[in-house]
Image (cartoon, rainbow, N blue to C red; front, side):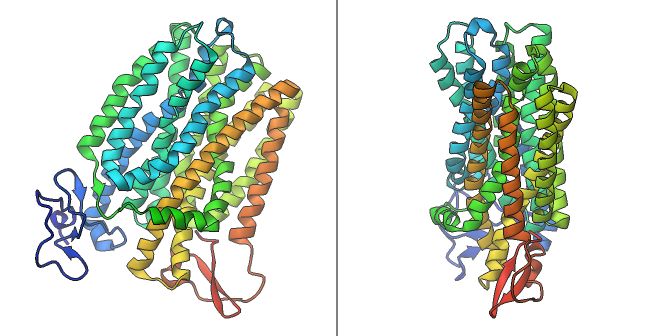
Length: 496
């Protein structure tokens, strides 16, 4: 397979060649998916090692690079209001509880949008949708620039903050797109790099907010907004010039229904609430917690808030890489245990109001959420590949089944996980209203991590109660074992 053949683009014809064989393919073209113009790749088989070595890896890495750029900007805009609230002094007339609810609005909208954004990749093409979704980020930035001043009603701020949720939707479409480009054995690293590069958008905009507050002062939030306008345009242009659409990724609404019926989708949604929900919720709330619990000024809070999200973002690819090597379930379980311990440190520091100890525990939590983000997302394609083997599929048929359901499941799991960030902010809001402190909220988070750890062990790591361990499943399911129970091979997901 030559590079030219593997990277075949559609020609200006809607006709399938007359000599198309029974399988619907001719010269790499897929019947019914021939496109008129544009950057469409008609054949894509990353599990074929020859194809991957000669052409696939180069194309996948290029798309990954520019996907990261767009997703990075999307995360910055999604977390825009965690920075804007630091500019909102007493003259805005919004109390701490109101600010927590304000930063929760983009989380809610972004979580909901992740479902349609997932399927937009198949409907419009990964490259095309990246261009569209990047350009849409101009809307929340422009509208925020209009209303960001004292005297604007709280309802208006809520509506404008909700618009920033479009940045959260970018994550789902980006992850679904990159999942299709990479073979199973490399998905942990690729998804970790894609998500980690995107997550860094959170600390970057927080650092920009710190720079503006420290130089121009808290009266100039529009400087932050002005910086992002050309960056958004650049991200859209780069995606248009250098990314590709994959024709084999078809719009399959049945996949969404199948994924929704699969119990593992909802189990992984719970685990993703514990990891990503914590990351995005803490990222949005960190500055407000420092201001209200430890009496930090906006400048003092801004000088600290970026540290946790930055470290959590940088470590995410490491979580994916560790999951590739040791199994996502094992890394995820150990991570939840560590998150529980770090939360215990935060509860202690919160109770005694020790800022240094609080920062140590909270930043450790951020690092662990990043590791867990990488390991949990790696589990998703591995689980559905193991499910394919359990159904008796093998080779390309198993790979197609795994890609189909894992891509659909990622949208649902990402949506539920993001909404978990809403829960974080609402818990803080209620905690400060009732107790004047974040301690009760942290106690509830600790209980959540205990539940997530128990579920991870019970579903993916607990030894089979009956039966003997059989030979590894065909092709390994990325190392997934199988056991015989009453004569039926049952998947064991310790290695996913």
